Length: 260
Image 1 (cartoon, rainbow, N blue to C red):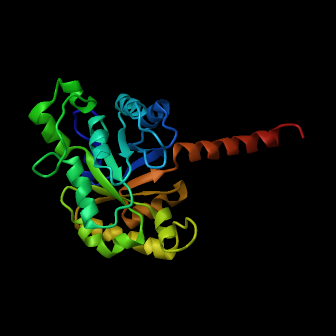
Image 2: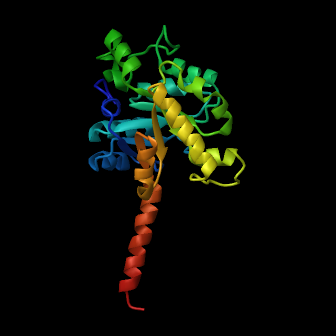
Image 3: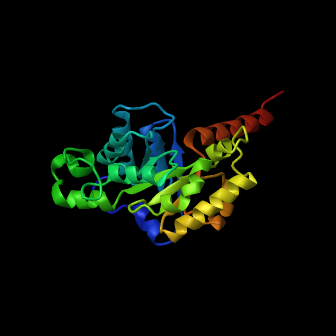
């Protein structure tokens, strides 16, 4: 995302629900298709996908071309990755597995310029048009337009959820139901377990009090359920899961039509 109003932020501020997906293939073509299909955002996974090269920059360019907001999830406890994500044009950044308000504060500080944060200045980057539109206006834009987010995905975070979501400068939270279910000892991803849903409801209620948006991955049959709970960023099937689902369906159809 280059220096322009963040349309995802604007949509959320208007009270509308944003619809997006996750991209695990790291394909610029897929990011472009996501935009052309009408998605509001694409979450690019840099936590479980090992990519620390120019690929991320190409994904940001694809997002700009197709006018879709790119969310880049980066590894925890690596503040320079937050800065880099914003410099290469991420419209939102996401840091996983936050347990305490101190950790949430560190994320915000890494994303903001002084005096609020500790982000170092350099305008020679994509989001500042390689220095041609840098300076004070770019600093102000950088501190106000990109969405800064964290993940609540561990039971330990629930002890501090009020304090975590009250951190100034935090814009949104992605509730990671699969990992949360693992953290309470279920032994596998059970996203719709009663305990998990109860924690999610508490997170949504707390976030609402502090003006923080909540996102959640889900399936098409559960979109209405998520929206009813108060989710404002609905993340439908990722590119790889969607491709698997469609291909399996096509194979099934073809098998019925082909000679036995």
